[in-house]
Length: 65
Image (tube, rainbow, N blue to C red; front, top):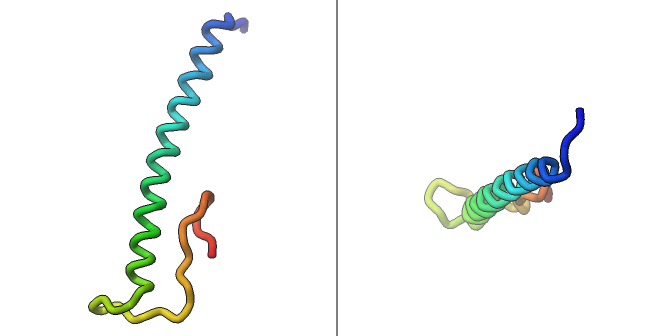
């Protein structure tokens, strides 16, 4: 199957654009998760004990310490 160069460029451009959108959303989710963990780890909130160990924060590929 032969693909012309212009069509190949369109395909690659579409894939890169879609991946960039997913990355932006992932960044928003990671920041939100880190804020929740920070708030829970701080203690002083009702029904939340002050944790002695540092809570894991979201990394590029899931949770890391």
